[in-house]
Length: 209
Image (cartoon, rainbow, N blue to C red; front, side, top):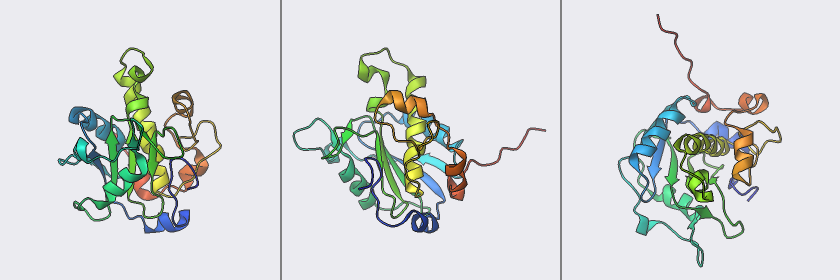
């Protein structure tokens, strides 16, 4: 593994060439409020070049893989679980699993998200540490949604074959804390943007008459 939130298989160029994506499908993992997922799907759709929709089927909580001895879900096993689900139309869609549970890896105490970069098809994001209440602060749905957007775009960037970036204001910069995630924002820097596939580029907006 090249990083805590990207599982590499092929080269970045191979991944981008293979990823013909028509849609981003958000997969509810466990007891994730559908109203929240619909808000996040609508938000994400304004920043990518394809439709984003929440799938009707939810992976039940009892079917989510946990890390032994830890109150966390196994992020790598979640990717495998997403890959094993029957494919919904259209072909070539990216699956983005969202959960309110904390996630981690055997070699990392936690991760905000994880993505496979070899087939351009699956990623998972945890909303747990993006929520101010996780740190004992007052609820702030706006902050949670803003952070979720950045993390979703970060993991989709990995799906598209991008690696971590050193630019401080690029969404592809590695962030090991929520403060660093806030600082990097939710925008791709110019060099990273130049390598985005069509599906991850925002659609052009038509001005009203």
